[in-house]
Length: 192
Image (cartoon, rainbow, N blue to C red; front, top):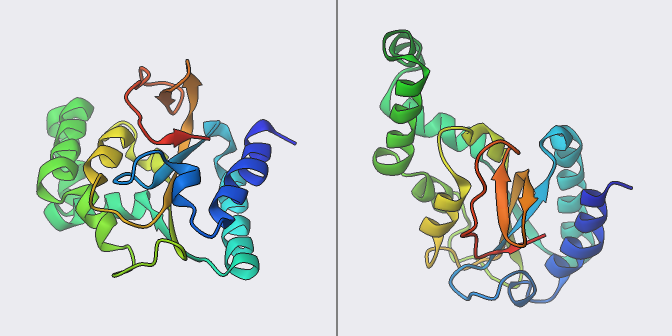
């Protein structure tokens, strides 16, 4: 069994199955979420296992899981600002670096990614029953760091959640997004 699958089934799943998962996954009341890291090359198997985890939590523990694809959120944010055809034309004119800056600007300021994500959460969610999963975080690479998303969601989210993070651990609390970016060492949520 791969290390990530053991952590998913033996550490994260029991924490989420608890009557109130928040104390088990976070030491911060205003950040009731955790990060589950996995090797980027395991993406498709992780997606399958997350689907199975959702089913087990709902069937065996009465939880209600909201799965939010960050790839879909990225698409929604971009399409709200610029038609895809214009994005392709813009890349030809300003290059990849200019396109990355443009998408980062859209996600940070114009079509705020934290607002899109929080708008997809259940209204008046029950923190003992409702849980959210943020999946497909790799789609944000290299436009937007997930650490920024989690920090900006602080105080907005009241139900527990998990960011499924394609990256590698660097030290005790550092994460290298996609195993490529320089490690961020300012993650406050618990890392599984």
